Amino acid sequence: MARKKIMAGNWKMHKTVGESVTLVEQLREALAEVTGREILVCPPFTALYAVAQALQGSNIQVGAQNLYPAEQGAYTGETSPKMILDVGCSHVILGHSERRQYFQESDQFVNEKLKAALGYGLKPVLCVGETLEQRGEGRQKTVVSFQVERGLQSIPAEAMKDVAVAYEPIWAIGTGHTATPQQADEMHATIRNNLSGLYGDAVAQDVCILYGGSVKPGNVDELMAQPEMDGALVGGASLDAESFVRIVKFQS
Ligand code: PGA
Image (cartoon, rainbow, N blue to C red; front, side, top):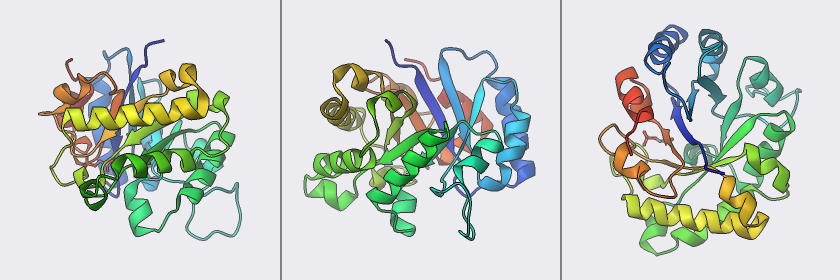
């Protein structure tokens, strides 16, 4: 089965409700004819409901950027998978390097979040990636393999049809330094290999592995031409309609 490309925008902590709705109205119109590719936008929590409403009946899906792994309770400031589903999300980004770095999220916590997401029928995008220092020491494959294996601990093979992995080298996020298509493809092959070891080849072949880190209109075609590239997780360049539209409509 050929993997369908997933083109996702991670808006991070950007855009008010009004700005979010304006952006998705532009995207909705400009991307209406796109078929055969999954399109996903991940606005901040405050805009999720309005964005999901504005995109009803469109070919663009909505995701959250995080969740807390409990249904409800005394967790001030947190958001449960049930609430995320309730506002119209289908996906959730988990284990983004900014959360690992600034909020000390461990692989084990990310794994709990994945289980919670899947338990509610939300599709997780598990983010993994090495630092510049780790790459400098030649440890990128070990680091990323460990994150994949720990992040997916006890997740059964049947659930993997709903899981995507995003390889995001930390040194490429928001820096303008993109991994070369060959570097990215090599890491994607490593991740595919990890998935094969965990779940067998047939399951591993169907999992989408996205690339993230300074994806732009000017480099997306070359990146997406690599055999192991199943899509992109785009930060900065997803905040502008024209730029994200060009990325979603990459030519390979
Ligand atoms: P960037 O961010 O495209 O701005 O580098 C990617 C990400 O962090 O998901």
